[in-house]
Image (cartoon, rainbow over all chains, first blue to last red; front, top):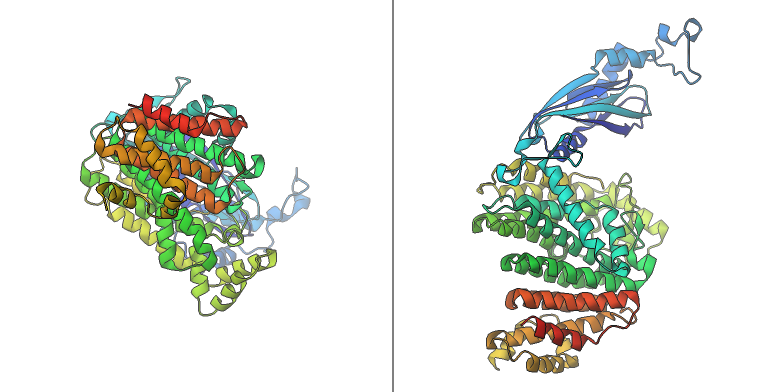
Length: 478
Length: 129
């Protein structure tokens, strides 16, 4: 059993907050395979509902609640003269309490194969009835956490304190973090300190996750070797980011100053080189030639496409074909290599290795498209318009530049100097066009295509996890 | 054109400008160092070492940082060298080369003058044999 709180902020008086993806994320992180996720509102003016997320329908619900419990309809609860112990900020909200009575404060959603059991049109909503406010739901996940990985991977492990059982997905993540920490502890400070700062700032750790998952597929699964490879690939990825940040003149990454911005270009180049070399050494020391070659080819593809990426900035924003060519190298190559190398490490059959490689390639492109969309999301936590400012290849910009209505203005703005006003205007134009919708559809299409690559492969129970990972990689806002 | 030239030509995609700019001389000097390795892999190993030398020079490692375009070209040199080693070198030699780059870059990061690149790579060939 895992107990948590799900926190969110509402922005409207009445608001249907779709929490489905957050719940999916909780299920995924917990490693729950088959069971239930229980939800309980911790407020008397927040209800729960399972229904369709269609904007007009949500307005119908809102109207229905207004008709059944109209605001300002003379609720006795709002007659403060007759009540005791009233807080100074007590709201006039009799209608909100009555509306909550019409909903429910508790619900349970079933979980199977590591995902919520929901019909095609069902979403889970927290219904704000007296907002805007900060809210929280209590959630508990219970059931079978043991089947997320194959029995040979060690289904569960005891936590360090010896108390509760940890699901194996969590253990795997801990192993990678431990390996990263261990490797960074033994390096000289001038290189280790900046890399530690970057690694500790977070990151999605998608590539290590892909390594660890695919390393469970073959007959020779060894969680420690998989964690060593996963950590090395994460170090390699971070080494490329350090050089990228110098090339892009980025000042911040993951909310912290970049190595180049904080310690200068010379140090950034040296740190990138050190971890490029160290990661390739760690991979070589694993002693599987196919794995070493797979990762080396990916690294070469990354470097070649970085050159193309910078060259294309002269023709900013570029076109779809050039975009795909760059992204296949810049992002997808390491996703594909992560999937393939994990499978190779476990001595999976060649068909499975190639299917996973194709899955990683498509997922990497889809991931990059979703990443491009984040640049236009005000809720991402990142500065909006950074890609525009740095003239980074971005599919929403390409589509907006092709748009019949906004295209001419987008192209004119991008051809000139990009100050704050221009970046803001381009952002507005992209949002007002159907570019983001097109990119989102394309990314989701690629994620589904990635999943189709796995249909003929025996994945030993990992399919739901790989499905969840693919879908969450494209449906995100950070 | 010799078989050796064909092999090298295939590995110079995007880097052919470097060949005339000193990479060919560096490559030839490493051919003398790798003569104790199997004949078939000697050109690949010598080219890997030459690319590492060219790469770190392009990047300005240990000196003034290179502009972005040169850095990326240097990165590609290192990556191609790494792939050549992955495909053609023993595990010991791969590890020895990686350690040589770790030593150079750690020295550069600390601001200390490190050993010359050539010495480190020749040493790697000796220890990785």
